[in-house]
Amino acid sequence: MTPDIKICGLKTAEAIDLAVARGANHIGFIFFEKSPRNIDALTAASLADRVRGRAKIVAVTVNADNEELEEIIAYLKPDILQLHGAETPERVLNVKAMFGLPVIKAVSVRTREDLRTLSAYEGLADRFLLDAKAPHGSDLPGGNGVSFDWTILSALDGNVDYMLSGGLNAENAGEALTLTGARGLDLSSGVESAPGVKDPAKINAFFDAIDQWRANESQGVKS
Image (cartoon, rainbow, N blue to C red):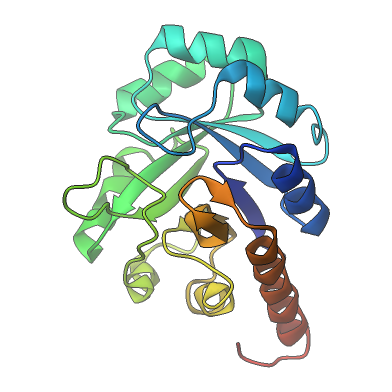
């Protein structure tokens, strides 16, 4: 299995070029003013054009209204919309009908009970992103650098298509893939030197770890 890799919260040409060169097949731009990774649609569009066609362009929004989505889509022309807020199943259906784009629905997870949320979105969202619930007091729904107990994902139906997020980095990426069988990993803070500042050394270390995991898998070695 070759997992999808999404690097999110990108803001510079250097980081985007490196991420895609190393193997990221999804890149995420965050449109949420409270986030240190927030970016405007015009700048994001310019950066996305550097890798368009080589990686899927993902617009990450949090409870955005139609006007916000229209502006982002007009400039960025994303391949995928990621809804990372409290969007209801009805809202997901409405967004898909209105904009005609695939939707990743983020679901915040802390306990096995939280996984029940997925059933309401099955058949509506094209994919799920399972992210750790934000720590108490955080204004950010994601990018907090915390993880959850991945063993609870064994309760999921094997047909549920999801990307795993939350607290991922070079040190635990292989373990995460081996333990969960996730079809994709999504990370942001795990390749940063400070909130919103992507670190080339950490990006390289992460992809080195992914390469090692792939090599181990091909040889039947457990990570």
